[in-house]
Image (cartoon, rainbow, N blue to C red):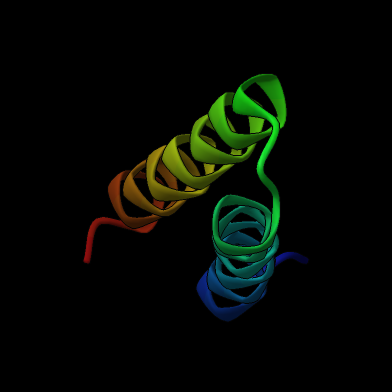
Length: 54
């Protein structure tokens, strides 16, 4: 069974990848895609907290 910690680990990795993309790239489209990845990571953590009612 997937636990809350597993969701948070995946969310943290997605956020870190997105943050690295924002900081290291100069192409506007790549920066916007990385920003969207960061927002999706935040959404994933919110849904995980809602699912486990923490």
